[in-house]
Length: 164
Image 1 (tube, rainbow, N blue to C red):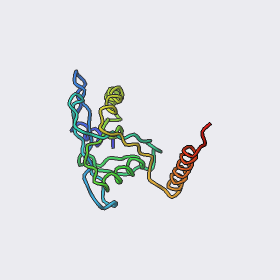
Image 2: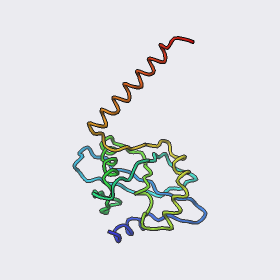
Image 3: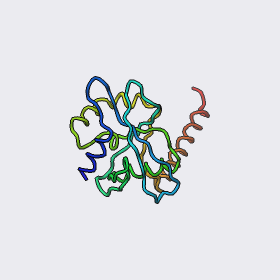
Image 4: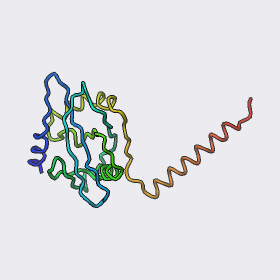
């Protein structure tokens, strides 16, 4: 897999000179959640970035992993990221994305350190930041409903609170 990773990132190299390049990701649309996920990387300059969305998420457990196609080559991602990519694809998300696990060559320490030092600018330069907590499960759905009900109850109590 390391050789495939090197080839994938060699096709979209970053320069470490005076320019601050970074990679952005596009997801090819598909309505069938069972189809492979196809993504492409693009190099852009931080000084003139296109519109993009940054993803904030937990990497999750190292295994199991799922396979995606990154620049036409097989590439392993963790389950939580794969879940996000499938969800984003099903909603036809066509905006460029910044996803650290894919946009940074994690096997290259020099690149990883350089890109991590730019993360503040990457997140603040994004048009939006999506916070991905994972797939919605029945338990999570019930938790959100309970929090919403509790929140509405306290708002109602606060509004109807007698003065003094």
